[in-house]
Image 1 (tube, helix red, strand yellow):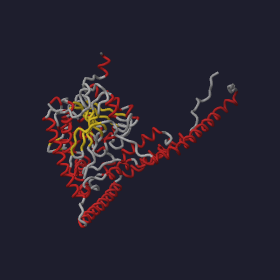
Image 2 (tube, chains in turn blue, brown):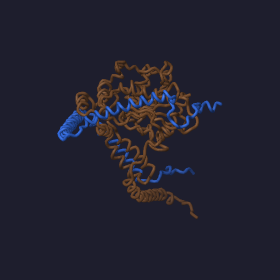
Image 3 (cartoon, rainbow over the protein chains, first blue to last red):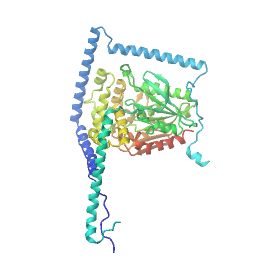
Image 4 (tube, chains in turn purple, brown):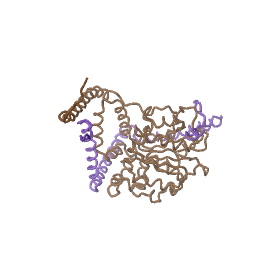
Length: 129
Length: 375
């Protein structure tokens, strides 16, 4: 006699259902937020917020700069200029170092590590052999 | 010894008993996990960030904040053509070297590739003047020459991720390849945007009617990382909360927690975007979509992606919310290579290159593609 019972179901797992609910809710919420953030109103509001934030940041930067000048301390701009000059000196030194290395014949081999052979073949060719 | 149930009454009772036993079993399992969560939760709070970018390497060239790394070989025989990894300007490069066993770089080294990487570093205030021309026409060619000098090989494969893919494609379009006396042999891009009309919410948010990029750059210089981080998070606002819930759910699982922490650390570890470069990409690419229109110029030269003739692969992610497929799909059609392909893999923008998904899907495909073209 044929067994007419339904196929066995996996045991119920309320925690798996909860995890599925978290995933579904995440997708739905993201969609709702994305729809809202894709509007012109949101773009305008976010533009306004960025405008206010950058204005605030600029005011703070200028205030800090004036303060440091008043107390005779280097400002961020002074340090940036110094860093730029140091970088230029560093680059020039590196170029000189490179030229020296070439001149004494160490071109392209500054590493003490042994160089592996550059003869590897792709697996497809290895199989064919 | 147990006797199998018989008769209609026993048969009707079995599913109920099975379901009850199943629920009891899952409750017991969750109780055990809850106990382990308490212990592991304390560990989570008390331990520092896991180490990242640990694959041994040498810095073989530096300029400003740029560092060119050469990773130390892990095998005795490597493919002839070295690989140069070109990374994005707005995130740290260790996404490709998260941890031993979870590092694309380590994987490539183990499979016999000679690997170099350009790390752009963290832009300093004085770097706000850098434009795409500096990266594409100066820094990348210089690094390619260093790779050539060190390796002694005439050619190099570029593998580039996200905005690094854009830099790689622009470099390839504006420099001769190895068949014309240049250095480029192969180009592999991952999730690279070219059609900015397809950039979804980013496109809306940077509409020139509401988004004054000049004021931002003029006032701030470099664009602060917090601004970039907030905009990426805003693409999927509920995922932050859901991610925390999943972390709590998996606190008992060391592997999950470690992987979560590494990826979270990388996601939050944004760097400033050089101001002039941000102005240029926002105006000319994001707002005017000039690259797609064939009108984009760098250093006075028109960028024509059909000049790219080297073997080319573009790997895109099926569920990429940062660079949607609509923004990336045109790239393969725009390059002029005979040997070109687009490969769509399951996953998102980050899981395409890092994590378990990448280990199974992208990495072996990349190895196979490069191996055939690196001898």
